[in-house]
Length: 353
Image 1 (spheres, rainbow, N blue to C red):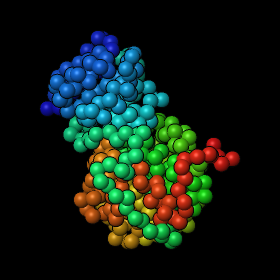
Image 2 (cartoon, rainbow, N blue to C red):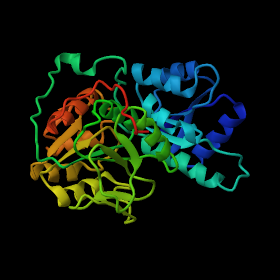
Image 3 (tube, helix red, strand yellow):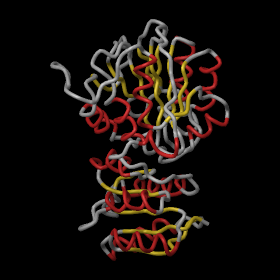
Image 4 (tube, helix red, strand yellow):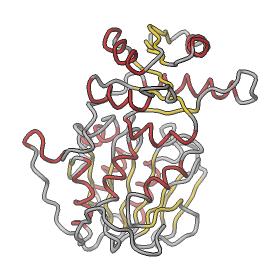
């Protein structure tokens, strides 16, 4: 039985959402809260498997409450809000974000209910860790020493796979990249349909590199970042041309990290670098091992700085990660691999927007 703490400011909405969740016999709402502070208190009292929380509450909204919970008593949190909040939900530490349920008479209401139940189901049992402080230096805690990563002048492409908790980690990586970064970067981020445009805009603000949605047939250019669009796999061929594919989902994901890493292995083998970041499940872990066996540079995010230590944890278990690093270290490491000095996240060059 999945126990859920349900948080929404309206009594009517709480009852409606309780009915939506408990229509699945595997879920039970063990408590409801009408505010962020009440959610923090009741989460400690009831220890629910999942917290389902409205992002739009007055006072301490769901985003602020998520941040506080992930820093003090972390547990899987599903935020429901409008389309503009997906990236901010992940930044706050939520493991999933869905659109708020519309009027029950709306034509998409049943689909939204299914998405809501599925998000709560998938989040139950996800291993989450205490939120790493954005303002601190994550590389200095716990006696951790910075890994030494040598330059690999043959690297032709960087591939990154990430899921829940990804946007702030991607920002932390990309903000270290100078405008002269010498190879293209391909990213698969598991994200709900309709939100990837917001992710691209968020990442563009963090980096001097050009961030764009991938398009089939484009030749990947040095210093450009290509993000997989909604509902299609992203890959690359030996000529550096981007591939988009509507093949079936892999591990319930499309785009899938496994597809990206496999295409990089075929096209570039050891002349590549691949990174697996925070996220639930195991997407990309086995394929990262293939890349390591081909002598590619392979990196997994460490447990301490991962919101969800699923994908990188699986990769580490398989021996797929040549290096295990904190979120703050990965950008610098990729710069060293590619033979450029990392940036402090300064000015964006002219002509990039």
